[in-house]
Length: 174
Image (cartoon, rainbow, N blue to C red; front, top):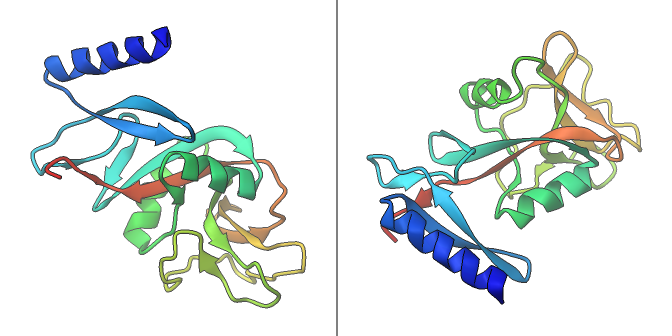
């Protein structure tokens, strides 16, 4: 109970300081999150990077594809889909300077090349490396920054890699 009161007081202090904050439900718990304000009344959680109408977060902790997707979902996000070349380049900057291989939200859960994004977006932009996806039965998940070309590869979902989450920007007027 003392922790809850401390969290509420902390959130109130943040609001009184003129910084926008919101309550975010994480499982059975609530936490106060600071939101970076901007002039458009739309923004991202602290430490998230805004590009167009979405917020992105690079997760340095290595996880399997499924663990990474669940981790993003806990934050109200999904592993990122990619809509354009410009967006992909922006997402890549989050992995700089090493451009580490990282999970993004593409998967082919069934046999064949029926790739889909975990956030339900249409899978109409691709950046596959030459010869990919080669989709052996054990390569059903999409990673970015593969090879010197920093393109996409299908690989085993059980590999432990860093990841990138994405969610819509928050409307501060709602």
